[in-house]
Image (cartoon, rainbow, N blue to C red; front, side, top):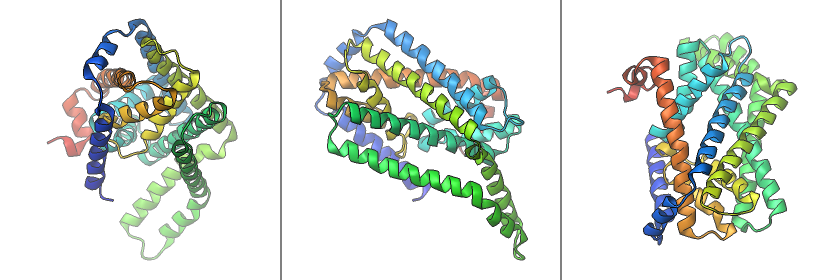
Length: 329
């Protein structure tokens, strides 16, 4: 599928989920619910979200090799710029921006940085699926399609993990053949170098201690995500089972697998509402919750990300040229 078609698909999904989220909903009741929320829990939720981002930067340092990893505060800045980019660009292009910025400002090979971001996402999905399994086993109220979807995602994740493992251990031979082949040209040699650096970025997969640390940090990160979601639920005086917050985190996380419009608009709200369906929450209350949670995350990522962008590159215009050259027109 071409990039343009993928972007169009993301926009269509956004409209479909927005229609689903607002169809048949009393907007006045939604606004009333938002006006009545407890701001104390929102502030606590915001603190937990920032702590989650800091811990993500700390985890990223473990994924990068020690001799080329920038400091945690520098990685936090790059991370937030990536999230800021995801908020204004489709298809989560912020992940590529992160790799680009590491290469531009901190002399980290871009392919290697991108490989660590892939591993990071795999660790997140492993943690999410583990949480989903716990929720299904201990709180059996979920419809069959949700369970089937979890099984499908598990199969896809296992396939991706296997491919990454095979790539890490078998790519060296392929790269050597590419370089030694008589017909090798400049492009094939450059591709071989990129593949080699990507494989080096996957080096964490061969270090059991690092894998254990990264997975442990992933568990703590998602515990913070769940706690922040619970704070927003409590701000609406929703006294639900802890599994509600877990399931919202799982569903919103799985929604990120779809082609994303800027800021994940519509898709985020749709999956958050779907997560609350098994718990008997009314549509108006579910929509109020999803809007506030999404706004809180966007406000934090865009405000911190904007400050980090200006600090890293000097100005928004300069950042646009350096990181998003296709947008600097």
